[in-house]
Amino acid sequence: MLLDAATCAALLPNRPVDGHKGTFGTVLCVCGSLDYAGAALLCGLGAARAGAGLVALTVPAALQAVIAGRVPELVTYALPEQPAGRGADSLEASALIDAKAPDALVIGCGMAENDGNRELVMRLLASAGAPAVLDGGALSLLAQSGRWWAANKRDCVLTPHPGEFTRIMGMPPGEGDPGREASAKAAAERFGQVVVLKGARTVIATPDGQTAVAPFANAALATAGSGDVLAGTIGSLLAQKLAPFDAARLGVWLHGRAAARVSERLGDAGLIASDLPFEIAVARHELAATPPASRA
Image (cartoon, rainbow, N blue to C red; front, side, top):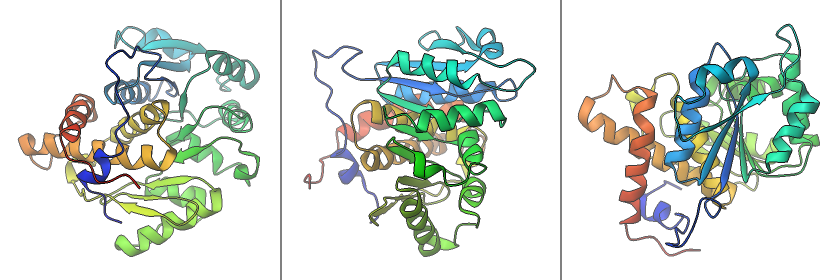
């Protein structure tokens, strides 16, 4: 199925005028490292601009002072760490995350690949709770973790680019729309989760064989950090109570349309990821004015 505006308009979550920040959900982004500090911020901005009521960044303790206050609206928590750069203290870190009781998690944007973080990701997935977006470093860590999906107790949306897809599946995605669609379906079936295979004409697939293909192919999106914004956007929509397939479809649409709006001004080069979050909010407003397709 090719995604279109009418279909995505029908997926927009309700925005009651008497709602408050709790109404629109809390997103907790377990993201970032000293090498990729911006990834956490971009993820958080994507989540905030997509409509979440509250967005918090849970980052390595050494990173918190670097990013705290850079975006005043984002809460920051220090992730308990082991000494000597061994990554998260998985037991204390998972307890902190559970205590915050978020409505959705985004795990992995800019996350360092080390044993502590791998243990944290596995511990979070083995604990039933809020739905999660798995991106970036989390996907690479899961590729090193055997049959991780057998222990997973959360609803997830996996958002691999082709390189990450190759690592988690052990083979590259197919070529062209048919090959990429088949690859995304195979991954969704194996892992039992929604898979978003990023790239030109992004493919979204479910474990039961449903697929949606985005109409956007935009060279301007080939820039560092754009996937972090997408992960945050999908996480925000999960926190607003959309089902994983719906959150993924709507998130991909808003992200692609936001990039198209930037390209209308700049052309096919020069977009940077931090251009996208504001345009995601505009794309959502634009979509809200589109007559929706009938809900199934």
